[in-house]
Image (cartoon, rainbow, N blue to C red; front, side, top):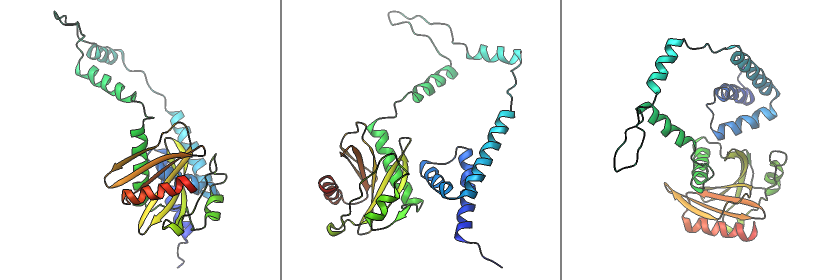
Length: 251
């Protein structure tokens, strides 16, 4: 009886991710893992292409049927706003049905701007925690900066510098790809004792230096040489500040 090779096991897992991706169920980290795998695995890449084509054909075969006239009339009657109630001396306001009010609330939620510091910080905290929980901290495990830096070439539209601060007590342990704000970013991974430090890197687009804390994690963001750096860790904030100082002066 022959055993299953590690490659076959990885492909079996990726085939599940391919189906989940078509169903829109993957988070950013899983999407990045899948993309990295199919880039190097012709078999899974072919399966993904076949399943994508099949999904498109199935969707194209579905044709929505028009609603019966009686059903449309009933829905329009129920969704019509109530008559305007005029109150004096207050302003005149239209009274909405519950359904109309719910629709309005949903539309307001859809138009909340995403590009805020709070939204960005939340994505970075989630990316750090997700990497730890999914045991996908590293795509390229290495303490050699000359191994980690070339690994990013061709995978990103920028070239992050990869400094090593081992002599200062913050050794490099590797790197990976992640997705933040809808774009691929580099993640440089360092360690202080048993505490991992994720440094997310992407081209600067106006993000300002800042710091934040959440559930025992600390985030520090800064810019240098046209790139944004965001370090996240459960380190003592003073230790993380010392790490950031090294990066700002020698990174």
